[in-house]
Length: 460
Image 1 (tube, rainbow, N blue to C red):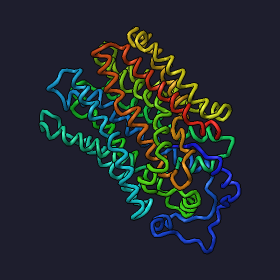
Image 2 (cartoon, one colour):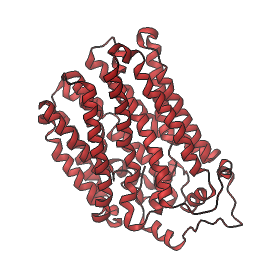
Image 3 (tube, helix red, strand yellow):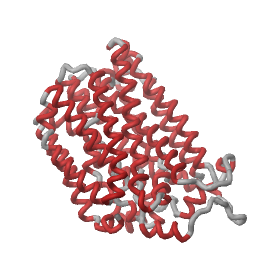
Image 4 (tube, rainbow, N blue to C red):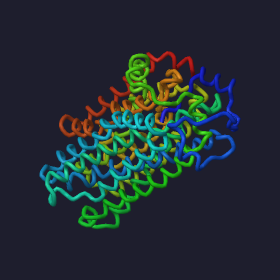
């Protein structure tokens, strides 16, 4: 999901362009042969074709992500934590929600070992198979009333499985897209993969809103909530074949090899590129914190402290996600005009200003909540559109593949993993003003990281 590009790498691409023809003496390495020969073809892979693979892959992953996120508010507290009051039940549900983000870096490391030992196709297939099995496994879970703590253990295990799989699903397509994008359209191509987030949210929220509006509460908690997880499984299967069609080609392998997009030692990465990993994880902190403060957190707050129908609120969030799509597209144009560092810094400052209005808007009735959701999603689209890979251009070509993946994992862990838990806990126990401080701290963290990363300013 990291789509920055490095001037040095761009120059290399200019001097040694790939013309789409495989030399007669070229042979795939043992770890990159196999299924790609099935789809062998002659012809160049254009950035637009890579972009299609990126959008399909990310949209399917985000749909799966938001299906679980919405269920963690609407379903899991009642189904798996009935022994707690409503607030604590949701907080416990958010604890389990965070498990995927904690497990994600470990999934990245494990599946990179799989890639080194076997092949890219084996890694991607294994990761998405695990994701699909974990997702459909949740759909078949019994409730706490039927199985007791066994149901809780299985929920936690499947959630960890989702996180491991999401880490392993890194296919290098975003980095490859960034390195092959035209120099003056890097921001445009960078935002394409980010479109998967609002698109995935709209589909997930739409399914849940339909279920809530057309099923009784008893039917929804009995079987209705399981349907979105089956849909997520089906979409993952389709996305798997779509991505494998691109991955399993000699052209794709050739491009990855030319760009040195291969796994490297984590020890070596930490020793030589640790600073870039840390700054990359913090540079988009404001965007990742806002991500859950306009999606998961307000849904939980409305359920606890408002009489507003949840299906109506999900529809409102869908409209907000539509604005986020517009903002994401605009972020590409803005970044190409003014530079990525300027774009990220400006949006972090705007998010800091927005944080001051959180209490008055969320506690201002339906009108205030509407403004919070719509403005928040618009800011999210503008910032998140350029958030991925904020400093991965700083990685040397040899370390870019592993560095980009781990930077993304750590950014999610630092900025988003505990955001719903912290925001709901603070607002319930100390007041909504502390949510403002939480979001403000994310914006300050982003500005600090961007100020340190002078290299990004030079490359923009």
